[in-house]
Image (cartoon, rainbow, N blue to C red; front, side, top):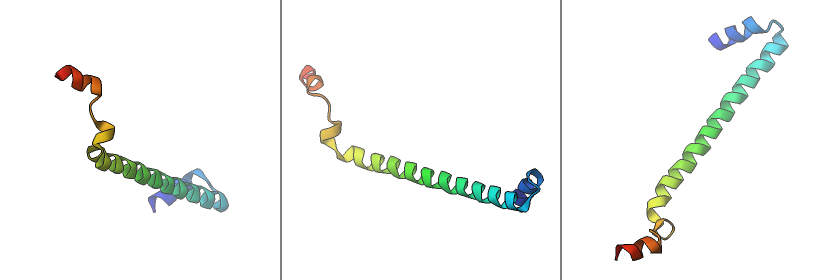
Length: 67
């Protein structure tokens, strides 16, 4: 694969190459997990925000000034 060729060009020792490959795979997994958690938190916020009128209601002062 292309990734393996790039890593082989940088590292000549096979043990070092394998360790670097696993390190890159781990990094990609962590990035995926972080993106999934971030997207999940964003979707929960988007879903919950319009349904919590008490939390996101206008302030009493603003309502009193409108009258």
